[in-house]
Image 1 (cartoon, rainbow over the protein chains, first blue to last red):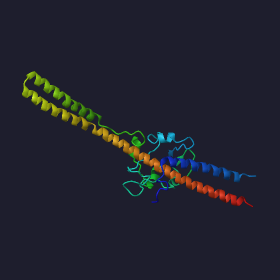
Image 2 (cartoon, one colour; image 1 turned 180 degrees about the vertical axis):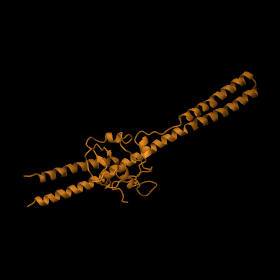
Image 3 (spheres, rainbow over the protein chains, first blue to last red; image 1 turned 90 degrees about the horizontal axis):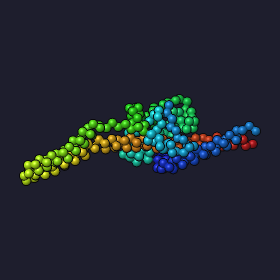
Image 4 (spheres, each protein chain N blue to C red; image 1 turned 30 degrees about the horizontal axis):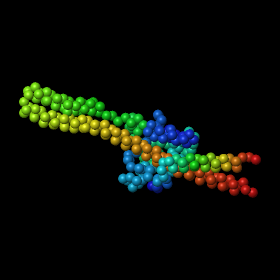
Length: 39
Length: 218
């Protein structure tokens, strides 16, 4: 069983990281959408 | 189907409140582990409480924010099974009774507590008063001396009985704290696994973007 990657990170930091990841995800998805738009 | 409502867009205030009181109708998870399982600093060296990074996508049973990571898997495995397979244990009795789901119903023996308190009060207060009443009525020093000794003993034992009456209350408080800590550790492990999952999703999205860039370049 592998260790948790964020085992030693505090709860607040984990929440901040989750928010950050979601923002990144939105950004990436918007980029992909723009690329897939039919010109 | 169990939903973990992360409410990521609206902040975590509700979610954190729901740690001690999750929404009605949701299943709850209990872990027979008191230590900080998410940090691994406990009596046991390994993480018995751990959602793997792919627990969500395998089960598809956890949906975040009603659509976030929706449809994580083709097969809809209940959360209980997925978590049990990951080493967590769901206690059905506690889940259905609400012992874990915020409404911690620890039955306390109120009758015996009341009886113990009343008897402690009667022995600690009633017996000395009665003894001194009789001693003063008789009006002799030996009686007064005996009343003093017996009264002191009665107060001592009354206090002991009253203290013993509070033992079940303290036990129930300890049990509630243990249950809440287990639940909190479960949620902590869950948000950490969620973060790992988001890392994986972002990595896949970056790959897709890079591939699309390559394709779109002439």
